[in-house]
Image 1 (cartoon, rainbow, N blue to C red):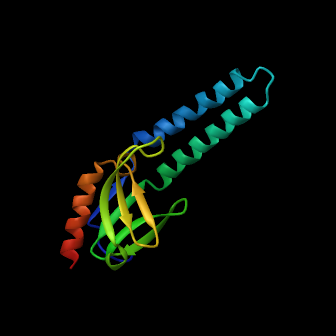
Image 2: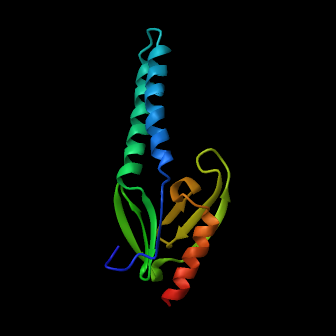
Image 3: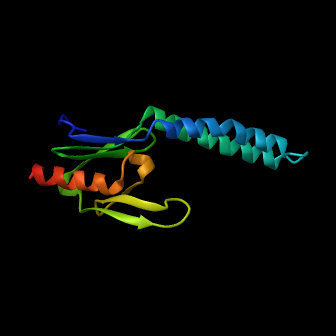
Length: 143
């Protein structure tokens, strides 16, 4: 974020990357145990384990998913980068209930018109509705 004071930030809970990293080894072992001479199963197990390790490491290296300050928001950009969104660029902040496998449950949506940023409870470590209320309050006090 620019040189603004951070009014609040939300991060991935510490248990989430630990769970991802702890699940990687059994997934790889499962692929090896079920191989039975088939190369595809250990490769898929290794690939899934590598994705979980990468995802877990990203959560450890860049745990803050959302930060708010007087000038706007800071959201993830790329693997570990940050992007500043000034309040003038933010069109809507709302909570939508999503269904499906990838993002089930309430999700915080931040729409800039050019991009849509989605955050689940596991991204924020808090209820998306409470975070939306905090963002609306911060935006109102920013003018």
